[in-house]
Figure 1 (cartoon, helix red, strand yellow):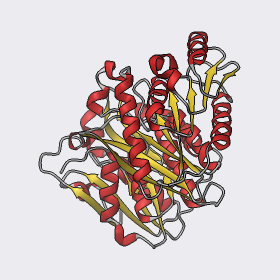
Figure 2: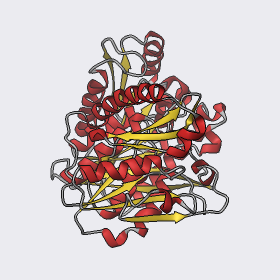
Figure 3: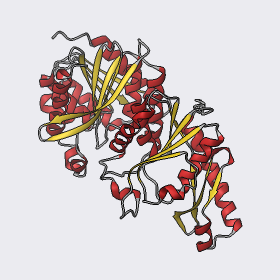
Figure 4: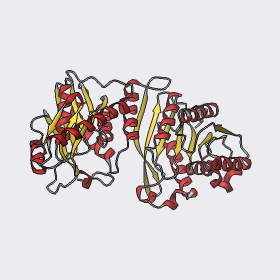
Length: 433
């Protein structure tokens, strides 16, 4: 069995754990790669999601080889066989553990922020990773959950060696694994896409899970699901999020090779959700296509994919009656304006965009268009001014003071979110079908 990516692995694992739905369960993902898997499991079980913070203790001259692992609340597990075989001294072990404990504390603050950990006392903890190799990290995670008061611990992974249950030494009350192949060498060999998970994706998973449990938008409830958008011969992965009572839906066109996991676009999307607007974040290119840099600047290709998403949204029962907007970033902004001529969205917003790349189509755009550019991004600002002079529709150019191209400066992306929210809510009205 192979998995396309961690999301697919999580969906399959969630289906296997269906019997836990409705029970007092907390899903714990092991950062970083285990969290996207755990997020899908938590969604399937309608359970809260948290991280179980552990750190591998790597052999000094071979860091990928675990001689043990540590976790929160002072938990530590050592692999006696590895220690004996590598000859690591006690002082070396202590030095590495001290360093990893500092990282552990930093990660806790980064992932949870001011949000407290989800209580485990008396509950079933489902510990999830993207796979098990040596088992050291999984054992520590189970012990951390036990130390935090979990009454029952289930370790759930997509793939592991055949003897992985023995390696756990009884630290889990139950183990669930989709595949235990004879030829196991490394977790990554069983994934088509095993790209390293970034911190931004971990925090995004946790935020989405909190919104799902606590609600968002005017009605207090929000629904998010993974979708597949057909575009000719290809199928594009996406995430559709709809607050209850949504007044419109915004299709995001990512730029410069970004995917639907772009942390900046996700932050803007969350602000739109709070205003009662739904969002579709989807990949305009397949993984293979994204390897060719020319595709990132093929505006007709990108616009065609956005039009395919437009048709899909207008046919999808959950969104067919909603007003539609486009949000484009970088080259995605050119794709949004190009597609707007045929897609007829109610409004378009560009963030740090390259509308100049839609040059021949600009005079034909009829949708009200907002261009947002960083004040410290002079080249792109000039390109936007030139593009605006060719627009014949209602339009406005907003400059965010002090912002560079990626809006990484404190408060700048929040300003983008406010501007986009106000533009869309001013111009979107329920569609008539």
